[in-house]
Image (cartoon, rainbow, N blue to C red; front, side):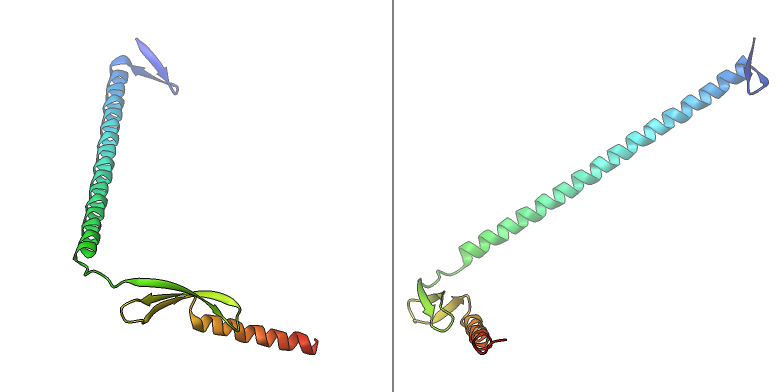
Length: 128
């Protein structure tokens, strides 16, 4: 029995060999794809484990900072109006020493705003 293929006659036994080779090649491809999926899965699992390890380590460090940190001084807030800028700013003050720890927004920034306001007033009052 002959099978016609691209104008040539091929024997059935030769065709079956070609089919067997194609099956082996496709099974190899399937196995390789499965290996690739497994390796990708392993890489992702390893990356996830590393991320979890880093986050665990970070949490431990943060806890150590909190628990090993000495008791901080008592602090208070005061709201102060900046005269020239006409805006309020917050002072964080150490109650024990009376020292200003921080000002939000900074007093220098409010001074710059006041200078800009004066400059703009001067420009608009003289007329452009």
